[in-house]
Amino acid sequence: MKLKPIISILLLILTSTLAAQTSYQLPKVLYLTTGDGEGRGTISDGVVLALQSFNKLGIFVRLENKSALLNPKVLNQYQIIMAPTIRSYHDLPLPEALTFLSDEEMNNLSDWVKNGGILVSGENIGRNTLNGKDRLIDKDILDKTTWPLAECFGVELKEINCDNFSLQADKKGIWNGIKKPFVKTPWRLVPVKISETVETYMNQTDENLSYPALTVNKYGNGKAVLLPTFKLLHPQSDGGLSTENQIDRFYQWIVDMSIGKRVYPLYVNPWKDAHTTVYCQTFDDGGTPEQYQRIIKFINDNKLPTVFFVTPHIRKDVQLMLEKEKLISLQGHSFNHPDFRELDYGQTLNEFLLNRNYWHKNFTGFRFPYVSNSFWGMYVLDKSGFKYETSIAANNLDFIRGSVVPYNIPIFKDDFFTSLNLLEISQIYHSDWYFYQKVLDKEIDYTATLQKEDAKRFKEYLFRYFNDVVQPNKGVMVYLGHPMYSGINEITLQPLQELINYLKSQNVWITSANTVAERWNKLKDLKISVTEQGNSVNLEISSTSRLEGLSIKLLQKPEKVVSPIPYRMVERQKEYYLILDTDSTQKITLYF
Image (cartoon, rainbow, N blue to C red; front, side, top):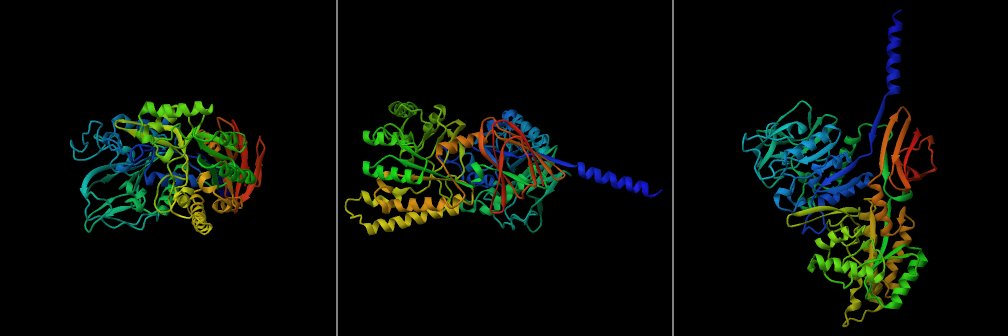
């Protein structure tokens, strides 16, 4: 008789286990920034690394400014919000930084976390009101009566002299501990009281005192992560505290936090047909008909989709030559080839309109002459319907500049700031001009020997850039060439030919910048909801437009796939990819 209750309990446990399920949505990230520099579309090193880190995890990132905090509909499209409180991420008058927030903005942010979002921010978020008042003044402490984010983060903050403080090693093992001084200003906000729902991952200490540093608060269905300083997510090479590897590991943790525990991990691969990287070939105008012919032959021999950025200053015979080629797309490069930084709004608009009218083409891509992008240039491109531009060169070899991941462009000027739908698809930092410019020096006999030396250096650069920057970040390599340099002869063209031969042996999607921009904009609207139950994984994939070759990376091969639409399963380096075309809502079940 005593066995019956035991058996019943065991059956109940077994039934509960079999019925248990995990449901989540593959997250998207909203990163709040106004950009840096002169407000012309460049972004800080930390934002570049965030884009690249999330891209490796198949996570789409949108850049916005803090005006998004007043629009709950926008916030609800994202599962992770990065809210950096660091000056170089908001190079505007101080009220535009995230340290200056209204009660309404902070209440919306708190509600978003309560509904399931993951918020990551620095200690000064919302410290000041919009009119500049320090919220500490009234009570000398930030609590729920003075700071609407207090319950969200589960802390009360007080300003403490941290001159002799260091950061201890964290529980996640991301940082080994950072010795003093880890910030320039000794007086900083630190948690002096934490709620029971807060977990502390790192402490900041001196010989006598210890305060929580990195904290995570469970608030409603979401979590709020508070950093002791946002420089933890900024690279050491630019005044930050972390290596790229440490930053990668932190973002992996945040993504895992958003998704929760899962048995069968899967990720979106952004590129078509399980390709892990992309190559786009582009040329600016300039050169003789013979040099253009050499480049065109190279394009056709290798079947390479190629974009030429053009002005009206090309010879008529060359124009006809380019326009008849099926693999070549023409895009805008201005009308008079000016330095756009010297133009006002009207002059900028005329440059775009005159060039479009001359070519009778509705250009969707653009490259600024001398890669001199400008505020008005970016603004007018966006308002004129352009989809992308490619002037902010990516380096990341000698220093961090530009991104190998496409991003929508934030701009600012004076008191005006906005985030554009215009995409930046960054070109390589050193074009062929950098290596072959001796051809312009009339005092130098540019012999075959000199050309071979320069070609060798160019090849080394191209291969290093792809292998060390593009491939690790699963990004895009945009070649920038000119017929008058790459097309001098077969010697100067050889580095590009060897690069193409190598890329064809790798898992690289060779396509045009036009196609990359189109695909990236479609990924913005892609939504994938996942439910794990037992040995099955149910996917609900929603896309507002046709997305060909959608690739979902799996860490193990399913035994069975049930899909209402055709699919393929391919293996790449012991990883499996489910590939399909979708243009609506599809429900697919994987059995493991």
